[in-house]
Image 1 (cartoon, protein in one colour):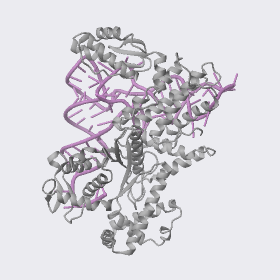
Image 2 (cartoon, protein in one colour; image 1 turned 180 degrees about the vertical axis):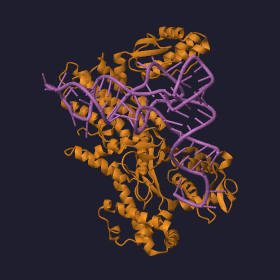
Image 3 (tube, chains in turn brown, purple; image 1 turned 60 degrees about the horizontal axis):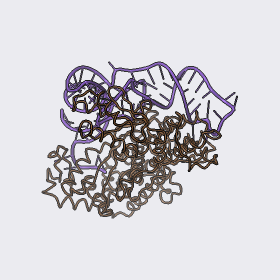
Image 4 (cartoon, helix red, strand yellow; image 1 turned 90 degrees about the horizontal axis):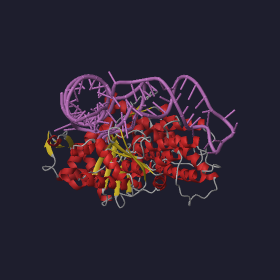
Length: 552
RNA sequence: GCGCGUGUAGCUCAGCUGGAUAGAGCGUCGGCUUGCGGAGCCGAAGGUCGUAGGUUCGAAUCCUGCCACGCGUACCA
């Protein structure tokens, strides 16, 4: 790769001139300055007690004849800018599609999504699914074998509330044999909402719900068992329907009820060493490592979420013993919680804990419209999907790829934000198909495909010796692809891909406006660039698990 | 109170392992019809980067105080 050779050359020159051992960094400057830039002269200034300008001049003298370099110049306070020859740039651009596989041979577990049956799947879950899926896909691009996992609270008070609600609804015939899942989506949510409300307002109901809760654990009441079973199934069918709309799948679902035994066993085994007794409960003293103290087993001898999560870590470890990494993706409200849970795991099983990381995404807010329902601040995932779907259908009734456009719009609206902080989703904006959006990138891709389909010229033997300005800009942008993917993998920040693809598409569209391709005398060169561009765009979208249709 | 996080254009956000005139979309205003898909392109207006200090040749970026907001803070998940 061109940049590696340059870095080495700079290193050698710095050593030769100043006997300095440095790790030069190349950055991508503004296009007006060149293709690569380095600030080593500024860094060396202090150590050598010479002026940055002087050092830069000396370095330029050493480097100006490097292969593939057209010009080396000094600018500003002492930056050294490198401009590649057009043929070197072309070569770099045309191999940009071939990415290294730094994670080859690794098995990585990624847990995300995690909506609870009997409750509405809201836009926060949607965010988690989209992010988790994109990160999984990103790791696969880097060569890893990824297992997409999810974890669901199938027991507990929320289930009891929903079952109470179901029992008290007059008509629940469709629960048994629902032919259209979407018809039932509000059904369970309504049952949960009424149960939750009754739990708050009505003491009799509260007792009844608590009783249901123990029956759920005990499994002794046939009617409750049946409602529990059918309701869970209905919930998961509903989740699947949403995921199908987004073209997201998971490899394995873990249920909270499955984790209890393993978790409890693990905690009990480590009482005294890792856990201690306090006020009748079994706790982990997080304060000794600067965290909160949290309860793992309650004074009523019930396992908390913490214990179940420890149990889950054991189940995963048993199912995938070869995994080298385990990533758990949740909303950032759980960040502190995971620190404590992982600290406890570290005391129990340091090797497993070292492999496990928690990755947080922000809370999803909505900027326009009333988002709160009667049950609180939950905005159903399905509602957002429908809104976007309707907008796409209305605007492009003839299109054959409306489904792909719809989920591109939704996914991109989430993924373009940097992971970690809260986001405010503008529903209008996520519906919009213009500007910095998934559909814009898809459209730009379809344009390129259309050109390629029309041309009959064979470009495999074309050698590019020189570019015009517009071609050069496009080639330059294409050549950055491997660096962007590399950074995205290292940071696990998918938004870098979005930003890059958007800029790339903009560069292409600008090129497209100024440069005729078919019929022009430069057709072979331009066609070759369009081909490279189209592949990068398709591959980049694939990393985000967004389809790149050839026609729209 | 303590802990974690956030504060960049009217709105939504990039930029944050310090570097060159702080970028983009939306919105506003003004252009592009004979040429490969106008879901596009070109341009204009719009910023004391929350605030006050500090470190540095150089700070949106690092450090400290303050202000505002969000989340967490023992038997929920």
